[in-house]
Image (cartoon, rainbow, N blue to C red; front, side, top):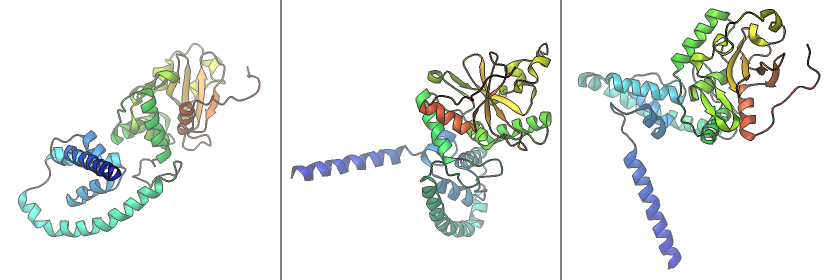
Length: 293
């Protein structure tokens, strides 16, 4: 009897938790925030809503959320007459969304099995990596900061400006897109790491525009190689730079450069590799050999 009573009480508690979660889930109506929609609604629900309102359903979850909230805030649900005329189409889309929703759920479950597996292409901008997203979430938890994601439009505009300055070869690597879609910079005090906000992630802002020692640094550092741009630093003098030349073999690789060193050092093949190593507490990779002067 005691086991039965305990099990009954356990089930009642679970039912209470489920009902409280259901009560706190906000409705998709004008006034709902991006954070609420992202937290409470899954991709399938977002796509169903967008289909019913005649909006595109492609893109990653963050893009779907922005599209839904933007539609709600614009008050573009349409008049009652237009809703009556589109009722038949909505019924068809509902039946189609059921089968498509099952397929999308299968894809989501399959992607969760491998942290290094890339998700399906969610737009023309970049491909999101499931494993990197989890790493970023763990870093936010460990560092104790609240992510402040950038909009796709903001990152795209920055890349356009970068191409105007450097040339058409300049492209932000996918992992850099994903990093700033997660948060526009952050500080990690325990690792003495700062990821710069994209707005100030320019070489002149970090290094300055002093030309006095141009000839001395030209052959030893990436300072005068525009394809390498700074995106983070450790301490006051060590900067991490990433190669944005999409035509280069070292595209997406990360180097470390310091005022104390005469040359830049390769530290990681990608941003994900660098941050994962910092998260695990592994020492940075250093190349062997003597420094060249």
